[in-house]
Image (cartoon, rainbow, N blue to C red; front, side):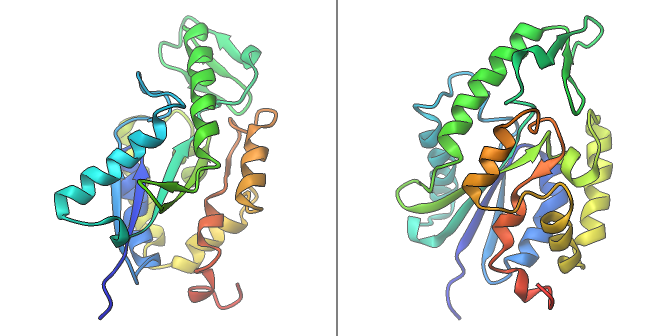
Length: 236
């Protein structure tokens, strides 16, 4: 049997892993899927900028590879799922609200007790995203593709914003149960729903940068599955 290649998937949190790991494992059944939980947002981390973010991602892959004695050639691709968090909205859409100690998201604005801090975060995030969305490889020549969830993964998968960690856990388990044995339904959901932006990678990223789309419910993840969808959906 041919050696399975590794599909290395980077997500932000454990509930993201819970929602998607089994589905991705079954979709990429000819390969081995590893979901790396970053425990945060690499595009807004202190000390991460457009000059070093690619190396930081490469280091994640290398660290995993070294732990299991893998080589670059053992990897099929790196898939990076990124929450948009309203990064591209105009500064005036970040509104001061002293009652919101944590950023509160709507589909048109962010309410926060610290508006200047959120605006600065958004500016930094945009610079780092600008380095990633056109990136084609990390750690040498391992293919890399960045996909977005807007405003975040919970918004796209469950149509919910501002959920607690407990709600995230409940929603992710329900989503995994709903789709793990119904892969065509998942592919239809992520590719054909009215929130799916399945043009080209470049055009889909140009779309999310416009207006207030980075707060609205959109994802381009369906593009990732275009080549394998026919395996699971007869009418694809």
